[in-house]
Length: 243
Image 1 (spheres, rainbow, N blue to C red):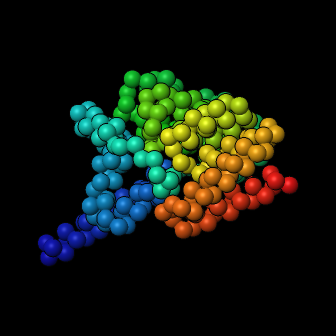
Image 2 (image 1 turned 90 degrees about the vertical axis):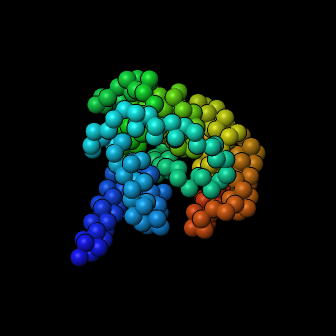
Image 3 (image 1 turned 45 degrees about the vertical axis):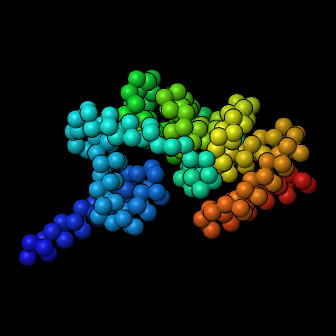
């Protein structure tokens, strides 16, 4: 009987963490895999790494500092496989996107000296981008990059470049993404760079970026469906540019 109750509690806990991940987690793609593959122990990891830091229950400062330190000690991953966790939104945007700087609940600068609030800043930026509040998202992302330029394995840097593109700050986006690809191999960065360069009339360099990323994706261990989708997108843009 005790064993049955224990199993039910474990299953309930796992389902609750799974539900929270689906509803509230910006990085749900990664954490859903963790929860499904690792099961109950994955739910424990999700609880301490994601659910508790979001502030659902009070946590003593030393524990938060410990989890933040562990995140900062992660080794920089430069393989294209890490790009599976980027947030892609720029291809959904019209060319005439207008930015509206609406007030937000928190001032991003308030978090400058608190590394343990990086996740809060990331969540705010993610929500603002989803709501197309790109100017506000830009402020959050700038604060994140000042604290940790490699946050989320370069995803924050990529999202910042995409936000600049959405705001039609093409020259700033170009400079940022050119620096970004020196450290990271996110395919979307190459595709956005190609779009910017084609707008500026530098067709040859744009084609070179697209051809480079197509080869890199094809040679990588990327998930099959993502490889096919990104290669298709890059190839389509390449054909359009060459016309």
